[in-house]
Amino acid sequence: MTPFPPPGPRLLGPLLAELRLARGWSQQRMAGELCAASGVPTLTRHEISRWERQLRLPGDFWLGWLAVVLGVPGELLAEAAAHSRRRDAAPAAVDRAGSRSRAALLTLAHRWLVDPSGSLLGVPSGPPPERAGTAGQGAGFGGAGLAELRRWDDLMGGADLAGHAAHRLRRAARALTGAGPVARRRLLPVLAESAQLAGWLAADAGDLSGGLDAYRLALRAAGAAGDRAFGGHVLGSASHLLAGAGDAEGARTLARTGYAGCRGAASPGLRALLLHRVALAAALGGRQRAARQALAAAGRVTGPEPGREPPWLYWLDEAELAAMTGRTLVALGRPAPAAPLLHPVVDRRGRPRSAAIYGGWLARGYLQLGEVEQACAVAGNALLDAVRSGSPRAIGPLTEVRRRLAAHRDEPAVRRYAALLAAARPYLPLRSGPAPRPGRVRRPGSTPGAARRPGDATGPAPTG
Image 1: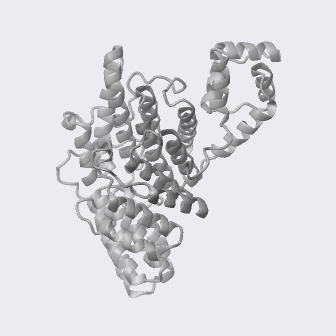
Image 2: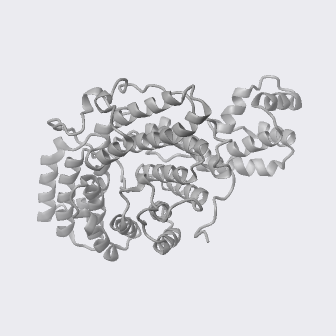
Image 3: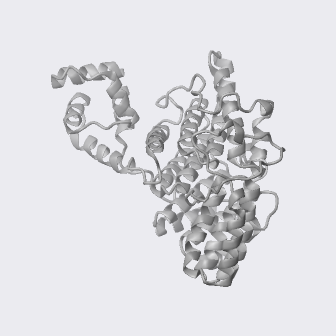
C-alpha cells in the first residue's frame, strides 16, 4: 500500500498534451482549431508547444477556448493552470535558467508517471548542445566506463569530474543518432545512465540548471528504454538536487512521482531510497507528519538485497540508509536518536564527501542538543573532509552550521572552529558556474591544484 497519496491536481501542460493526443491532433491542428473557434488567426503550433512544455501558461482567454475546442469543463483547465502556477513558482535560490529547467523537469515527470513507456516524453536523439567550457574535455578519461566513473565519484568532487561525464554523455548521444532499432534498444539504457551521472556530477559541481537538464534527458531515455526503475532513480536524484537548492516542495514532488511510477519495478533498495528522498524533502518543507510517514514506510522495506540491486546502486547499504534516517530526524528537530545513526558514515573512511555532508548534519544535531563543543569537533572534521572531497556540495550543511554557531561566537570551541575555517577557506571547493572551466578539470588520480577559493555560498545540500 502506498504510504502517501499519488500526486494531486494535474499540471496543465501534460493535461493539454494528453487531451490533444486523445483526439489524434497534431500541435498544428490544435492551433488551427483554436484560431477557427476564437476568430484570432495568429496562434501557432509554437505556442501550443510552449503551453504543453509549460514554458508559458495560457491566460483566461485561451483557457476558455481550449475548453471549448477540447470538449472539457473549463474548471478542469482552470484548476490545472492554477496548480501549475503554484508548482512552477521556484524558490529564490533557483535562478532564471534553473527555474525554466525545474519547470520543464516537473512537467516531464508528470508525463512519465502517466505513460512511463515514453510515448508522451519525446524520443531522445542527437547530442546535447555544447556548453561553454566543456568542448573537448574528458579526452584523457574517454576510455573509462560508467561503473569506473561512478567509483571515481566516491573519491572526487563534481568540479573535477563533471567535464568527463559531459564528454561521455555527448558520445552516448551521438552514438544514438542514426542508430537502427536493434542498436537503439542497446544504446538507450547507456544514454539514460550517462545522462543521470552527468546530472549528478553537474549538481555536485554547483550547476543546478545543467544538472536538471541532464536529468530530463535521462528520464526521456529511461522511458524510451522501458526502464521504469531507472526512471524513478532519475527523479530521486533530481529530488536530491532540488532539496539541496532549498526547493523542498519541488523535491518532494519529484520523489513522490518517482516512487509512484516505479514502485512495482523497483528493487527493495531503490524503494527505500526513494522513500528517504520523500522523507527528507517533507521534513525540510515543514511537513512533519508526511516525513514521519515516509520514514516509517522506508523502515518497513527490506534493505538492499545482494543480487537484487542494480549496479548503479552499488553504494547503497544499511549504514547509508541509517544515515539518511538520521539526517531527516535532525531536520525534524529530533537529534537524540539521529546521532548514533549518523556516526558510522561520518567516521567511515574512503568517502570524504559523504563524511563531510553527514558530518554537517551531525554537527547540527549536536547544536540542537546544546552540545556546542561536540558540534564544533564534528564540524571541524567535516570541514577537512570537504577539502579532501573537492565537492562544492559538501560545504552546504557546514554553511548552516556556521550560521547557527554565530549565537555561540564567544565560546572557546567556536573560536577554534572559526580559526580552522579561516585557515581552510582558500582550499575549500569552489561552486562552479554552468560548466566546468578547462583549467579546473583534472584527470582522476592527479594531484589537486594548490588553492581553492571559498565555496561556502552554497545552500544546504544533503548527500545520498
